[in-house]
Image (cartoon, rainbow, N blue to C red; front, side):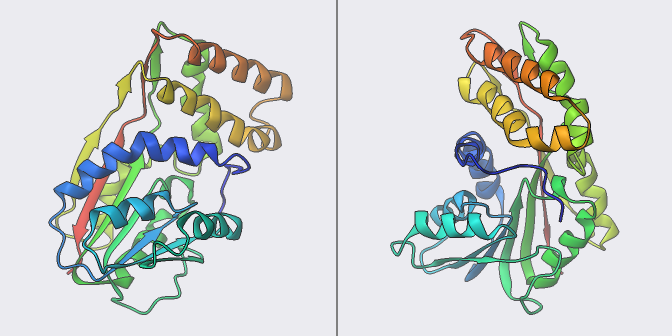
Length: 258
């Protein structure tokens, strides 16, 4: 799987978890989860989503977080420690999971699929390892539109930049159809957009650009001077207390595994 983000600065993942926490909480609370004994979190990164799931599910649930980056798995293990005995982490490829068919009651992924050239392969794997009667759920952005006011030229460039560096920057709108193509009869869908003068929202744009900076230069999307100017403008906006930021909408979609 191609992954354009360099995770040298783990503060970006912490920031994303802070921003997305309420969105994911609302989504999880809306799910008619069955009696869950085993849960899989794909693309778990440093384990922020896995620990959030642990806080929402019943005690005694076994949670497994999987990520392709072994360094992030080590961070996840060190952060969780022995106190979270019901959580384990392992390195793995979401497109070729090592689990048997119908292993989990609940399979979840957040902000994973937009990095993938073939997201339907991962969705098929999620369905394969989910038990009959269980739930497969994903949350993904649709990066076609984000903006701030007062306006900034940097925010106007973000959709094009994301579309060129991420494999599926607009996957949010595709999720319903992707599940239908895999034979799921009734995908459930919710869309939520975050907006506010919260500095975390504005900071997230700068931190993403810093994380994908090497990929932007490698792919010829920006040169070093353009990248520096973009970063400076995003920092300027970040430091303006009264700037309203409107984030990419998050599509939350789930299905019952038949």
